[in-house]
Image (tube, helix red, strand yellow):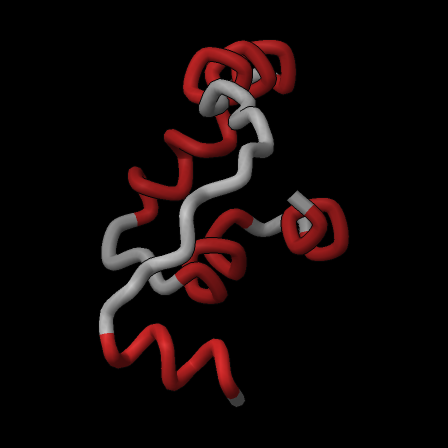
Amino acid sequence: MTILTATRDIRIVSLWLGHADIKTTEMYLRASPADKLEILEAVTPPSIKPEKFPRARDELMEILYRT
């Protein structure tokens, strides 16, 4: 969006993004900010609760813990 605002040329945006076809770039430009936020919220992973995990007891992990 920054490049498009600065240049006002979708072809330049397409080149910068490395799209082979300008139709690919157009797909991204058509999505509204509200739609983009909705999609991001839908795929945000659930929060992970911090926990203590037992220490691994294999040889490699023991070496790593000592260093």
